[in-house]
Amino acid sequence: MPGANEPPLSHHLVAPELREALEQFPNVDFSQGLEPYRVEFVAEMMPPLPPELEVVRREERFIPGPSGAPDVRILIYVPPDMPAGKRPALLNIHGGGYVIGAPEQNDAANRARALILGCPIVATSYRLAPKTAFPGAVEDCYAALCWMHDNAGDLGIDPARIAISGESAGGGHAAALTLHARAKGGPAICFQLLDSPMLDDRTGSAGEPHPYCGEFAWTAEHNRFGWRSLLGMEPGGADVPDAAVPARAADLSGLPAAFVIVGSLDLFLEEDIEYARRLARAGVPVELHVIPGGYHGFGLAAGSPQVEQKNELECRALARAMGLPPS
Picture 1 (spheres, helix red, strand yellow):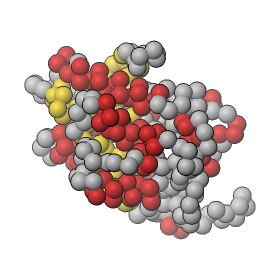
Picture 2 (picture 1 turned 90 degrees about the vertical axis):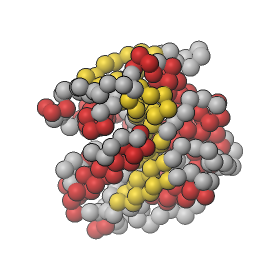
Picture 3 (picture 1 turned 135 degrees about the vertical axis):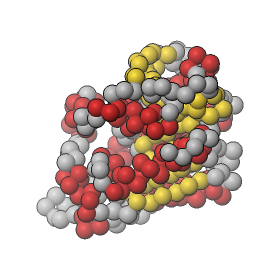
Picture 4 (picture 1 turned 30 degrees about the vertical axis):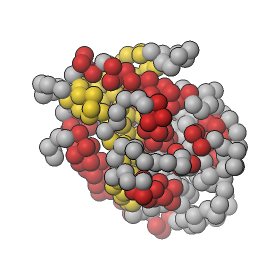
């Protein structure tokens, strides 16, 4: 990676339509502590809510957490005039490098998906690292999944058609949740949508780094901090428990069908491609998309053709998995 005064190596590879948004990304420096990014950061990164999305009802609830742990805060999104009968549903897990973030950061996206799909969406919080190390966060997400299944009748949802989604660390937690649910013999998950998922602690900690990936938004240094916080130990070593890292799982068979999407300049490019390859080798149906010129978090470039393509691909994949007609 270039030094502080050297030009970026990969700037010329960024898609032209995504360059303006790249300039608006804040400089995240975790060495200054996490608190500045846990409230103000989320608020600053959230664009104004479009008026057409205000018709989606949002309700906050607190549901029972794992045994001996605090309640889990969730947000429930319900579109207006939702069709009668049991509907599919989506559990969304927010990102933030395992150390920051909140369900509200996906507010507009969850409202839009609720409208497009005509189904409820549950956005869950989880305990953040380093205060809570593995497995606290995935257990919180599992509590939310179990609550959706247990209350399917009251929520008007079909428990056989619950999908999960997450971006970045949320994608990592979503992948971990499928493994956790399989190990527990827990509720069925019909589909996993992994948006630039954070899957492998060895990225940026072991092996040869990609020469053009991870220069923007989320770097190898950020990645080491996030994984160190989640694991409670140095990432990349042989002593890291396989159960804590989706990419280290030896057996991926029997997992839900998957959709994986990542930008070609994202730090997670190679680990995400590899995870998709291993899912396919394990007999799991998988759809993989690499967006040319996309960096980590390029979804913030609202209105760009890349983001419109990404949103359309994701919604179509969810609709197919949920047994809904294409929009």
